[in-house]
Length: 206
Figure 1 (tube, rainbow, N blue to C red):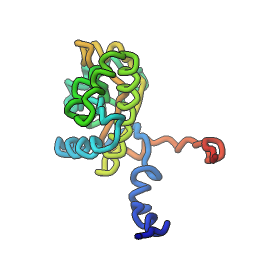
Figure 2: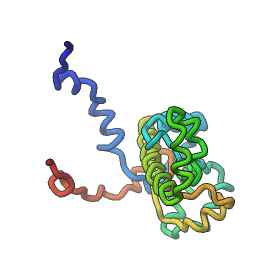
Figure 3: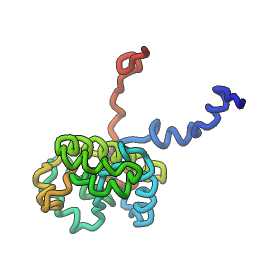
Figure 4: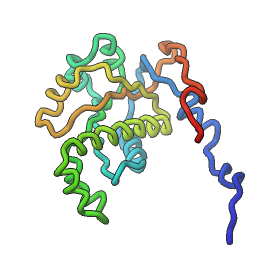
């Protein structure tokens, strides 16, 4: 019988440099350098984030990448005043939305349990909660994927969801969760990192 030591598993950990790129040195960006983001980078970002887990592999997130000035102008009227400049100057703004009828694709995504589709179709409150929770997860995966390929992120929720949905998702099937600016951050516009809770404040060992 093969045995595994804790040290053997620890050797599988990513490097400290990689951890710092994803977490330790990563910051929410407020300003952006005038450097474009290529379509190939956005495709790579998605190919990474889609592999991360969601419940029943439901994958409800839908992404709209706003790249052109005209596309971002459509977003402007929905933004809180304090967010306008950081959005308009970002090379890309990702709308992280969710598909309220994600369950229609479950036969493709979860083929070993075809009864799952009917369970969500018959329970709209469960479907809504599942779509929102899992699209939130996928939005976080998007940020980690972006950082892993060298992009900076500026996630935010300062917008009028009703106006945004009317502008971009008029048929009502998709709904916005949050926004995330993507590009190469201008470090001169960073605020000092805000405090975080320590382990004892946030965690419990039982």
